[in-house]
Length: 120
Length: 279
Image 1 (cartoon, chains in turn blue, orange):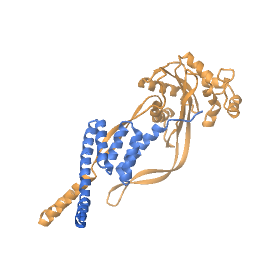
Image 2 (cartoon, rainbow over the protein chains, first blue to last red; image 1 turned 120 degrees about the vertical axis):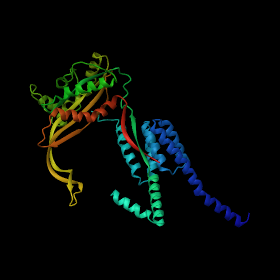
Image 3 (cartoon, rainbow over the protein chains, first blue to last red; image 1 turned 90 degrees about the vertical axis):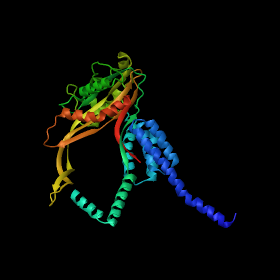
Image 4 (cartoon, one colour; image 1 turned 60 degrees about the horizontal axis):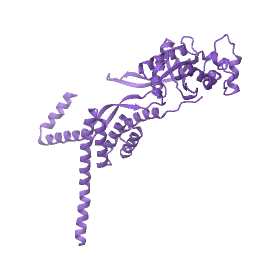
């Protein structure tokens, strides 16, 4: 293989990477949107499946992690919800909507974690 | 505003370049909306109970050491409220019996020969008080001399045997008036020279009075007399000094705030809320 064809192959790989990423994001977006539709009908388990799939397809998709966290919250899986919110915030630290969700979640989580009162 | 928009759109439509710019603007707005699209959704988060109550079929709200307000019998009101809430919830069968005279029992040493007393400091003030006069509780320290009753395993075991070994709920309720003055931030409506309404924060010095409610709920195993769990809450409410709010309504308002947490000790709760789903 000549140097020229090697450079060409490398160029093709580099040039197609964003396209591949865009394709993954597109598929993830479809899963996220379908997840929202089913969550609105109360099918939270199906929504979790869709949003988990979206995070697998595109692990940089903050919205998918945010939605997954909301669904885990609804299902009472608070440890998983915290983890998903943390990932969403790590990906988009300035997203005020994710931050707002997380703050509301923390209130509930703190209450649930408050197991022990003052002992006499 | 609408007229101005129409005018702007009209000026865009006049030329081909304007039309292109208008299309571009609309495309940008559409793209922005698509990028930030979100949906609000109601959720219900289930919270597991703090205490495993499966070994108990019955619950006895035994009474509370309470005082500090002559208008409200905090012991009786708390017993009534908790019993009715638990009946509505149907968590366990609520035992409808007279409340225990905890103050007298504490003074007598729990009706047992050797009631456990946590420390000497705690025991002394009870002995010093005039037995004919009901004690006054203004803060937590006033309640401390009576706390030993909750650790009296033999006493609670005997009560448990009497009521077929239920889960016993007891504790102390401090409901006291309070007065506070200081700067308070409130929102005030103002209108500028164009008559536009604005809400601005204003700091004003105010004399305020209200009540503080500090209940401690202690859950005792009626089979063994041992304390299973205890938790203390604190809620307060303040009004303008000239506002006349009955003590009883303040008591219920404060109890309303902490009842979900109390009930969550015994049964799972669903907390309603709203979250935002993102696209």
